[in-house]
Image (cartoon, rainbow, N blue to C red; front, side, top):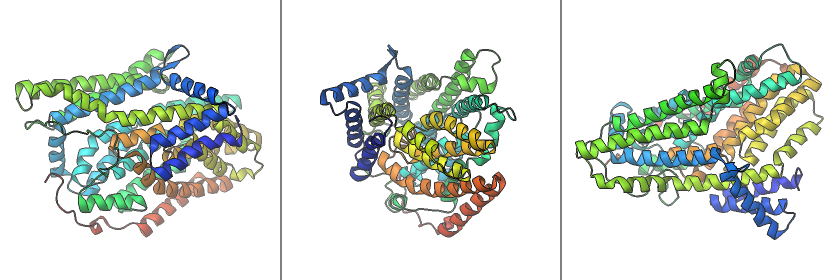
Amino acid sequence: MENTIFSLLPPLLAILMVVITRRVLLSLGAGIVAAAFLLADFNFVQTFSIMADAIKGIFIADGELNTYSLYIILFLLLLGIITAFISISGGSRAFGEWAMKRVKTRVGAQLVGAILGVIIFIDDYFNALAVGQVTRPITDRQKVSRAKLAYLIDSTSAPVCVISPISSWGAYIIALIGTILVAHGVTDYSAFSAFMQIVPMNFYALAALAMVFIVVLRNVEIGPMKVHEERAMNEGIVYPQDKPVPGELKDDLPTSSKGQVGDLVWPIVALVVGTVGAMLWTGMNAVEGEATILAIFENTDVTKSLVIGGLLGLAVAMILFVRQAVVLKGVEANVFGRGVLEGIKAMLPAIYILLFAWVIVDLIGRLETGTYLAGLVERSNLDISFLPFLLFIVAGIMAFSTGTSWGSFGILLPIAGEIAAATDITMLLPALAAVLGGAVFGDHCSPISDTTILSSTGAGSNHIDHVMTQLPYALISAAIASVGFLVIGFTGSTMIALVIVAILLAGFAFIFGSKPEEQPALKGNLSE
């Protein structure tokens, strides 16, 4: 069943069930069983053995602890505890009150999230979780739905990381491009130069980023997002109370009456400084030879850095809690244990979804779903002018089916290089750009993508609500990007393609947008 059309069945089953049932774990579980069943050639006993091996692989790989997944789980737990103690210390309440005096509109609240999403370009995981922590009190106060916040986070994190050379994504992609250039004897430009030339050709990433600001500034609410936003504005309900929400504190924790803005800001600052500093430190230690900034980010240990940053952020949150409990007497000290427990409980839904997603991604990898899809591209005999468009679509389907944009990069970028080198080397950079854009697009649409899961967690949004509300915007951005890839394929001109993409985006904003002041007046106040 490996590397055949049947390898598409498990991811399609999981995704179809998610859409129909809205139950993530049940749907992922069905996909896991289906994938293992195919790998076992319909042997029931072997099916359970394969599933057990995939689960084991999350924690132990090659006879050693799988620090990648363990560090992410640990970071999520640390973030949950930090969030709980920021709340107990009164930081969230104080920050919300402070922000209400300065950010007085829904548009302003959304712009805070969008701009922070662009500024924090170091890593998508870090972006999704950190931006959510800072922005959530502001958007909640201005009655912006959690689904909208999750969209703002998800549609800025990966797109900005994929076009930033100084990021974990950029370093990884530049390293892949370098091997492709060497393999085909391309010496006209370096890997870094090629990456920078690809940036304006990544029409999906640019369209997705532009779409975020169009949605915010022109009040574009379409599909399921309109339902969530109208409920938030008219009823003050920023997320459905009857649905599980990862990262949301379940029980009301006592809150210090003497909390200050710094009780939220300083733990987040420590988290950011600690994570970025650890990324530089781990990268420098791993570099052999000259430690350039690109070499550092290429070799950095992102997940270990997240844990280090999380520990520093937790230490600061603990210090501020002790200050509130012992010095200011704003809250009882005996709430400490409850805060730790509630912080952990808040992150368990996200961890459960991640564990299931990792298992199905592993099994889909064993089924060689990505390899099968890549083979379709290699066997196609379409006009070379269609190559960027075709690669964009296939990369999107691959990332959507496998839940990983990085896996799609690793498989499809070399294939795109081979096809361009064998047909028309001038199509090399547009082809690589199409793969990058398509992989991010598929990642945005996939409910089994870890970045999508973490965006839901950071925003405190129900996961399926986030997937379904983001989907229309991602599809529109992809349609506009597709035109760009067709234009560059036939004309070879990045500028002409960019102009057409910009015109389409402007047309969309004009036709579907409205002025911010035309939004319904806010009723009441969440703090009341």
